[in-house]
Length: 224
Image (tube, rainbow, N blue to C red; front, side, top):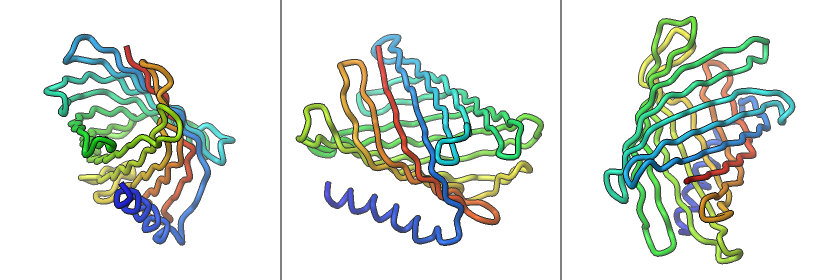
């Protein structure tokens, strides 16, 4: 586990090392994530995420993602969904993005203590008023382990890497798009709910000046 922690911290350090000429901001992301199990194999997921920028003083985005997942076996799940992203521009006005996406999720126990999750996602992104469709690949790896400090409290580390696979006329450029590295804790509230709280470093590749956002990320997960 120590090697995993050091590797993820190294990712954050390397990102920061390339951020000398970046625009930095403090942000807040709140995620509400709910799973409704239809049966042992099928589940519906509802995901709502409002975001704030400028140290939390201005509304930035709201993301809504309904999806459907099929559990192939205890370790492997396949899913697909739709995403609606409303972005409030700093200059005024809003943009509306629509996404269709597909997921492959693999999870296992690396040891008796360490849980591992991998999520591979393909996105097809369309912006209202634009004809081009942008395609993006996202890869997440997540590790968690009990802290043995408080019952139900686990340490969590994850990293998510984004790659655009084509160019689009509305500002999407092929290649590295962004990286998100998270370090925090997960607390089991009850048998049906848990939450993640921690620091998320978001590094965004931009044509002129890159952006580095320091995010207080809170995620509440529920299931029935």
